[in-house]
Image (cartoon, rainbow, N blue to C red):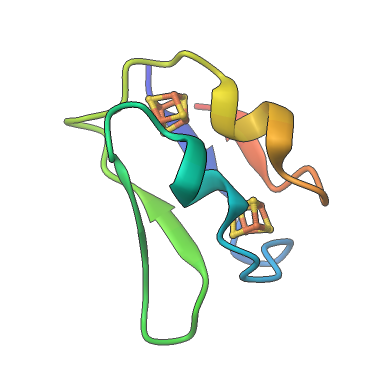
Length: 58
Ligand code: SF4
Ligand code: SF4
């Protein structure tokens, strides 16, 4: 199961993008991040660095 970003909580800091080992996270036009479920291996690293708890296991 891939992790997911809650866009209502994401503040667009992009910390998650820099730590994802699979490069599964990209930023949209609004700066908020989204996770590609086909690339995510559910390691949880992104969730551990998100300052606002916007990333949760799907
Ligand atoms: S759980 Fe791991 S692989 Fe999936 S998006 Fe987060 S850092 Fe990347
Ligand atoms: S670390 Fe959290 S707040 Fe920062 S861009 Fe990623 S999901 Fe958004």
